[in-house]
Image 1 (cartoon, rainbow, N blue to C red):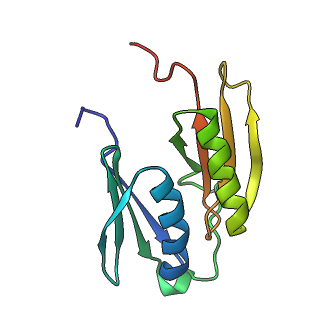
Image 2 (image 1 turned 90 degrees about the horizontal axis):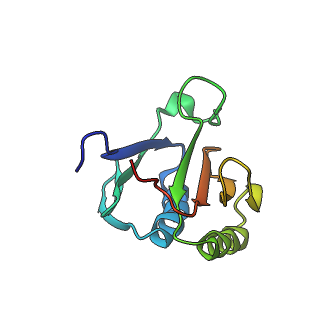
Length: 137
C-alpha cells in the first residue's frame, strides 16, 4: 500500500445479521468478498482494502448514527461508470434501503454523479462516479 492509503474501515452495527445482509449486497456489488466471520466481526476484502462490521455496545442499541455529531459523516465509494451508480440504486430500491438522494449529477466537480443512501444503522453511504478521477498530481 502507498503511504496515506486507507488500510481498512471498521464500523459498529446494532444488529450483525441485518447488517451482514446489507453489506453483503453493497460490498459484493463493489467487488469485495466476505473473508472472515465470527461472533465479533465480519470482514470483507478486495484489492481496494478491507471493511469490517462488529456489534456495538449493548448500551447503544437504541441509538442511530448521527452524521452531524463528531465522527464519521459519510463514506463514499467510487464507481467505474454512471451505469454502476444506477445499477446499485436499483438493487437498493429492491431491498427497501432508505435512499437519501437518487442518482443525480451534482456540481461538486464536473460530471460528479452519485446516489446517497443509509445503512441499517443510519450511516450515510454514497456511490459516486467522477470522470477522470483521481486527478494526476
